[in-house]
Amino acid sequence: MSQAASLAFALFRTADAPTFLRRVLTLDAVTSGAMGLMLIVGAGQLGPLLGLPVELLRAVGYAFIPFVALVAVAAARPGRALGMIVGLLNAGWVVASIGALVSGALAPNLLGMVFVAGQAVFVGVLAELQIIGARRL
Image 1 (cartoon, rainbow, N blue to C red):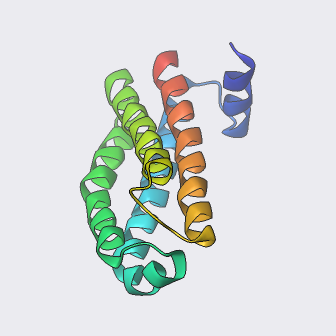
Image 2 (image 1 turned 45 degrees about the horizontal axis):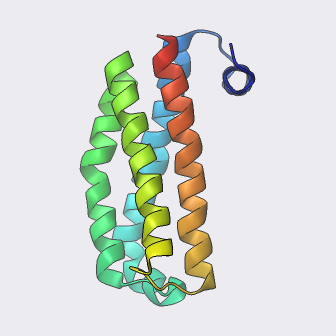
Image 3 (image 1 turned 30 degrees about the vertical axis):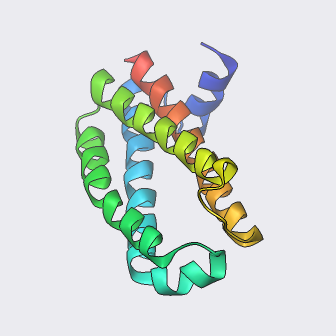
């Protein structure tokens, strides 16, 4: 087991791959649901604060709804394929988030850049843990 995998399994206190993956997916479902709700309800306040378009924030919040449903299903029945799919979707989200910043497609203020980059780092960690967990099955 790699050092990263050992640390990840220690953090979630289980050497049992299905339990580990279930916990990581559950964390993803809960945090994604919270982020989606925050973006839907708070887009009007967050947009000006972050220097991001309100419509974009709200649309991203709504896009989280089917994703959270998929992750919840994956958490209820952790399997290699669904775990890998969620991990790869999260990795794609990280690439898209960073790409939006560096391409100039978005022009957030400093707080907005920190927000986008911070959530990308968090999602990247989740993606890695999900892929580790799926591979261990």
